[in-house]
Image (cartoon, rainbow, N blue to C red; front, side, top):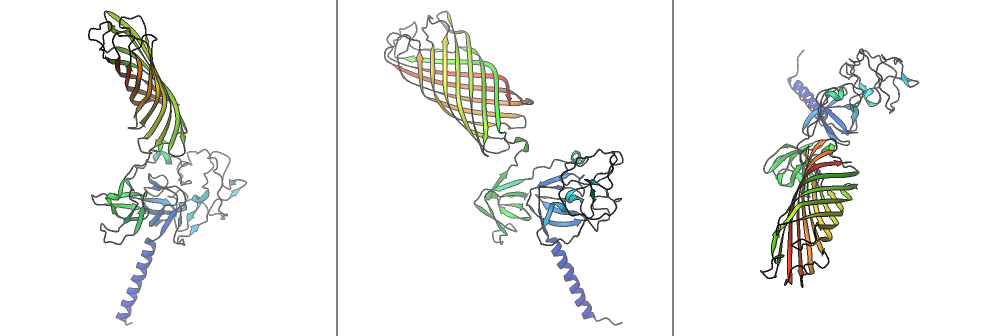
Length: 506
């Protein structure tokens, strides 16, 4: 038989065009996840999980294998089950086998009452494709008989029966979420957080190549999170859903995935108990005569003391970003022998109490950073052991409202946290032992800087170290009852306190 060459060429061209059209249609198929979906490295729920995608994510299908679909997402390629997605193309060219196990009086026809009863697959995962020779489940259902289909329903999660040695080899793959797979979670690898950036510009274009002359494929708004495929000084290649392309590097910044273990607690009670060492320095200056000696018109003291620092703070999470709470803190110092003057040791004690309310704003970063505003009231008491001391030093009470700021980072590293605060006490007042005053009070103010670090020790217990710097300034005018001839005087106190101890959260 003679073959017409022209007709043969036309037939070949038409055949190739049909194949290309079919291939292009298959490659362009898109699906959307119907729930949070695990992406497996290989086919089978026993395979390692490489990433997870949220409900509503659009994916492009690269390949089909039975009830499994190969997709690419978050810069990774893996497999998902057909039952976790729905087609966006309006048709599902892979018929779904309705082979299911019927239930009679709440149990399978094959289920026995003993421990040898086989596991049932329920819900969407009981569905296999008809063209899969091995049952669509990695060979675990080869011996299952065909049964009459039933109307798909979403049954309640049944209690899991005990498994015997005969059942251990079955790979039923009955739960796409992996919660009930025998040994499934043991082999699961915690997926690495993908390298991501977030759009910081009001909007940015996604280009198919690294050039503004290219036609943008889409516009991304501020806050859009993108998976990084390749970094560059000018352009960054990213992936957004099922689209990949280039964005301006200046329009994005690194996005750190939040630690799932650092979830906000509705209420936190934090306590601390520390002991340490203090240096309580001070300097007194006046316009008194230089001949004054008992006490002198100008002098400085630098006694040391043992210290105790106690505190409790309660904060409540408010809405998504805020904290509200309050607390009380005590710092006590005991100085013995104390201030040395004219062959006399003048012992004393100090008691500082701070009452405050706090409000915090959560930055939601990987360190758990919270920025705080602080409003409170401070009372500081200095008690002299012997009021008849040679230096005529009086007992005193310093008090006033406080306003401050603070920052806490409970996870600088997984084991180490830090905090810092600065409080201003103004306007302050200072009262002294009656008839032993340095004059009429002109004004008083103070400031307190506090730094602390914590190491996660055992459970809710932390090992803590703290540093506190206290600054107080007071001025007087008028005739002094302490030093003859003094009509103007100022005193500056500089206190340094180091403490070590324990902290606990409830």
